[in-house]
Image (cartoon, rainbow, N blue to C red; front, top):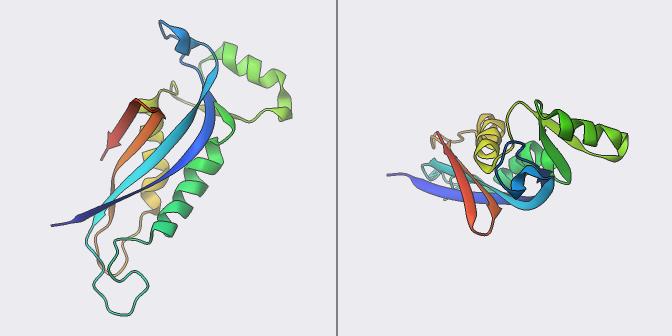
Length: 149
């Protein structure tokens, strides 16, 4: 049996879905929640800081902050093939924070991207076999996408 923990960070991030049939083709933003789901065994080694845990929640937060939050918070994520949005962002020059990605920035694709950013940093300590099993991205209170390993 294994145990699962979850920890999240939230960002304010803009995007657009250029081929969308409705209003999501317009530039807009969301309060995203990026939530890591980590599975493993509880550390049983006596006297260590992580005793009784899979991984310290603050360590998970640090990873999420550095590799997801600090990359996309208060930024506009734009697909490299979206020439119109890229041109609009470039007009603002250094006054605008733009993150160019090789995919259309849907919640589904952002979940996969965030998983790929975080997964290499989830480290097993004391033999507890940790692994990132999923990244959940809440785009709106009613809309969540998940990427699973």
